[in-house]
Length: 492
Ligand code: ADP
Ligand code: GLC
Image 1 (spheres, protein in one colour):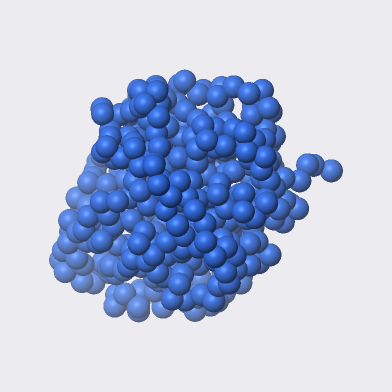
Image 2: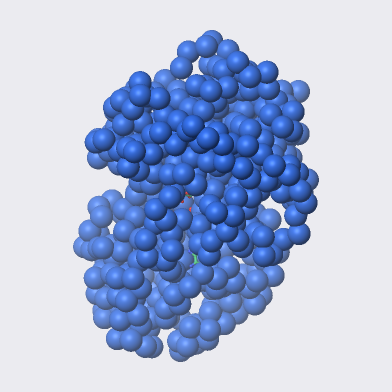
């Protein structure tokens, strides 16, 4: 029987409580999968306004002191149990009782360094008052990347934490948590650690860089992205940091939560369907077209997009490609997303120019996301970079063939169509250019119209793909074991 660990899983988003993207999906499904494997896992996230308004929580700790430079800041800790997993919420109203998680809608909050530095340290204080001795503290992205530093530099001799190892999972290294160097004092970053192989980044503090230097083991959310992070172009400027830790750095593909994303049991869609009976998918398509006020034409292929509207997702080159595709083809495009205003405006422009062919919804909606996955024929993810990507996994399960760029996790999960025998699960292109997007989408549309037997075969192949959390969890267990060994060896 494999070893059972005590794990603190700390993260800034967790599905059901706070979500801006796929980080939240993993924030809930990975701890649940670890719990299913018999581990004692506990989630720690901030007590955001959305949580305080919508959930009944209990008090776990009335008053928790957290060192912040030369003084202590105080918070309380609330908790609830979600599917057998305790979720602890760090309640500091000054820091977390706000409308949004990271920004005010226009600008990032000016005290994000303090907010997430505080969270990173509060996690350790919480273990001590709960008398919980974790084998592993599993941190995620820059928001919790300071924890490995505090653990090693400040808790070396603490009875509860001296044996604890840390793992840092990188979901998106483009976000690094870079802040003014003057925060080093309140964040208790020692002078010796404000150097370029640790926190220092052109005079600023870089949370992620420090986390990479200090965590016992580091992983990216797909093997493809892990590989890219060790190249100059793909590392978001962190090439040297990743190379220094190459021995301790790996890639583990995220799983897909099939309790939520499975067309056979999905109650957010108008009709369920399965590999053996795809009739429900036809109804889903009809209802999708209706909900986006598009003509309900069963033969016209529908391409869906659900995305944060940011540069990462490739809109720079995809917007002009979409115009080209809409002008020249019998096709409909439905888009759900929210984010940068220039992309929102451009998408509104497309919907205005092609009212019969393009529907756009600018907001966050779980329901519409499920509708699009179920009712579209194809799903476009032309990302500039994509650490893992979950939407293409959802699309595969719903028989909605992904059209993706060969980056990060997309290249690990979608197999390009082979025109000779109809093998493959989607359409894959290489370059981040409008020309490549157009060419690949045209090829997909041509396959839809002219090689329907291949298209149907691919739908079947796609729906049989399974990226379950079970196999990823086994890889995390191996990572934990090696992190513990590393910790025991005593090296930084
Ligand atoms: P990322 O985390 O980079 O945004 P992923 O593909 O990993 O990309 O995950 C995105 C997640 O966020 C998916 O669960 C997707 O359905 C969801 N999502 C993104 N934008 C929206 C939106 N506007 N409405 C509903 N869900 C959204
Ligand atoms: C990030 C990445 C995305 C990944 C998600 C979950 O938001 O952009 O590719 O799927 O994290 O790990």
